Image 1 (spheres, rainbow, N blue to C red):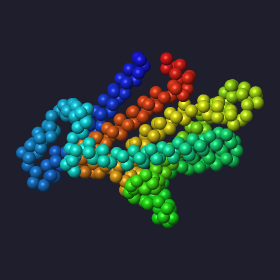
Image 2: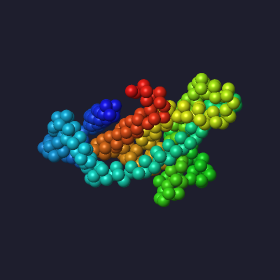
Image 3: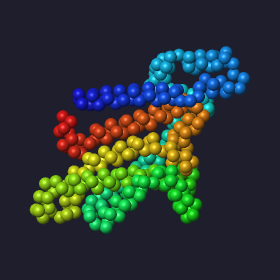
Image 4: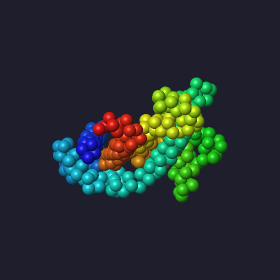
Length: 314
């Protein structure tokens, strides 16, 4: 119980610190939000500027503004967009499903392909198969997501015409077809990382004494890999998959922009370009919260997969 309370306190403290950094960083960015709210510098008078600052509480100290904003966030009031004049919560709620679908699709791809490639490389260690997997994953890791997006659009979208290159589609199959190229471009780098971690974790597990004893006892190699090697390697594999998935929540900006997806990543880019501070703050807070929640869940699940970690935590 004490461990759970400590973790919960740590999560809340991290969220509090992150929220302040997000709030302060957005207002420290170039550009005065009061000037934007007043309609620009054309015919802007000091009286009009003072009126706008007072109306939006921009004349208050930073900590007072932060406290007011945090209190509203706790009540699910994220403010009103400067650009659209709509509630920020409504804008985020309309865009978030697209980003979530993209992240889940990319996660499925890098888990299946990355873990599968890592297992194959570990089982066929020191063979041409191992070398091919290592070489392919090294190439995948070295290609930035925006370059992968351009290459996938050019080949599979334009030349072959297999997949659409813009929009998120409708219906299950339509959404899968539209999000295949964006998810693949987002998953390539993650696939390489997960594959490397899987390969190394299985190699470490295969070198343990009980695996050698099982092999000397005549246990079939397939059973050794499944029951002893892979099971003992699950801890670092699941941890890395969770961390990569959490990082993807903040890594969809480039992919959504390249494929014209209406997700929170493209919403963030638009908010930054137009100095729409409430939207930028809400999206950044959502990304950070998602990352913290996912990493906390991974940290909680890890001891269940590896008893040695559970014993050390106690």
